[in-house]
Amino acid sequence: MEAIETLKTRLMQCEATLRRSYEAEQARQGDGRRALELRLAEAEAQERSADRMVRSATDEVEGLARRIKWQSAELARLRAEWHTEYATEMTDPGLCPHCGQPLPEEMKADARRRFDEGKQRRLKELRAEGIQKHEEVKAYEATLEELEKKREAETARRAEVHTELERLRTELQALPEPAPAAAFDPKQDATYMQLLRELDACKAEPEPSTPDAPTEPAEAPSDADAEAAIQRFDGIARRQTLTRERDRIQASLADCDTADRLRAEVARLEEEGRDLAQQIADAERDEDTLQRYTRARIEAVEQRVNGLFRHVRFRLFDYTNDGAEFETCIPLVGAEGIPYPVANTAAQVWAGLDIIRVLQEHAGVSAPVFIDGAERVTRLPEMAHQTILLTVAPGVKPLRVEEGKRINEK
Image 1 (cartoon, rainbow, N blue to C red):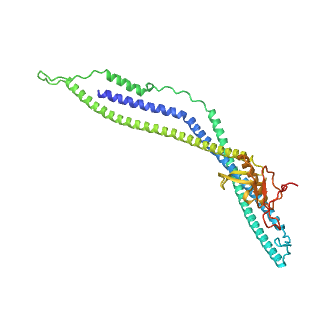
Image 2: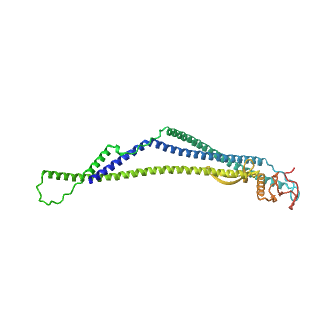
């Protein structure tokens, strides 16, 4: 019975060894295709990353180019304002606006001195602001040059990755399809068949009978009895040897099972790693899609809002120094797109009246509008509601209301 168990154990070990060899050979035959598929997946992930980097670099370049354009327009405005201020001359006040008498010379000199001081102060402020804008434009241009180089490098890297990806795809298509593997059959192995024959022969042997206690007087042992005893002792020794070999084989089988489990765990972790890499790629693609959707939505809102106005438009998103987008609301005046806080008085008045017009049309009301501080405005836009202009008239002390033509009528 022990010999049968030992043979069964050896047969199991032989079958396990043959199965591992079969699986290793199948894996070796498919290693080339799997390695190529893995390299192809890595190249596709690199291409998606390169596309993302090129788009990001392009957005940074375009955002900085818009900032440079706006700063250049601001610099041109400051330069024109400086020349206008420089060419401004003081007019002779002549008469006092209150009493109508000629002004003394000392008052004229004091007024001229204050005018010159204010003019120099304004010219100095414009010059300082212009120098600052010029330095900002230079810094932006240097940054733009670096970003252009970065975009070119990312574009070149994307082209290299795309070339490698096409090469891998061509190489994969050229590989022959793996032939279907033959079914595992351990009976094709000679060692396995030898063990199987030994097991069948051992099962065919009769069980040894246990002799009963002798009832007759014992006789002297013959040579046959001695030989039988020797064979019995040899059988016991062989059984003990086979038992030890069985224990050793069972321990080896346990180690083989552990190795199989470890290989299965390695395969599972590799598959999980590929799944995680695909999930990361999907998440990055979704993030890029969301960014593009947000940008498109803001641009659509910006176009719809700006379509309501005639002389002013709004910038609803801007870029940080590193190219990141953020939402904002900056009114821009005129065709040059000058920000409202730094625009001249006439442009601010026109922008304010344009905003009031849109708000009244949206609310469905027509209320009168009071305009103050518009002495430098030579013409007002056409309005569908009453416009009340507050001005300073020389020689008029009390507040007086007059009804007349529109200021923009000839």
